[in-house]
Image (cartoon, rainbow, N blue to C red; front, side, top):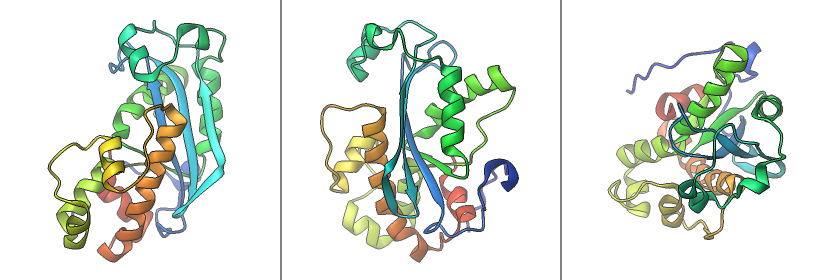
Length: 220
């Protein structure tokens, strides 16, 4: 039995019922693009997300906004995301974008790959603007993958051992999810959603049947 502590926020605040089946819950699978990897001195330049209802990816339920960054874009970060300073100079502020994103995420469990990095940036903005953290509970597909490698022999047979690269694109290729070289936050969120969709097909058989169960194994 796995005992992992996580902070519960009231369902009235998050809109998430922890007793709901993982196959019935709403998810928002998200990704961000950043000026750098240090949440203390870098900032968000785009947020992308796709909604899921249980294992169904809702292609019409998406969120994508570019952000006027609060810190300077560097050549190193531009190589990663391909966003030029001129493309974001006149975009909305992070306050406008995060307000819209909060509304989009209401009632959903956040899902991301190594999502603790995205949450660190979102929480920095939330604390500065509102004195609190991003309210929605979150699940990390990287942690789900590791847990399933440890608990499901069939999963290991089909998808290999836990050694090797665990980045999003490596796992996507392992699970036969198409990956293009070009990417942005929304495209990466869609790839993550397909990965999470694969995992949802296995989890109930392994005893992960409710949102509460999911958060036990997948807390960032």
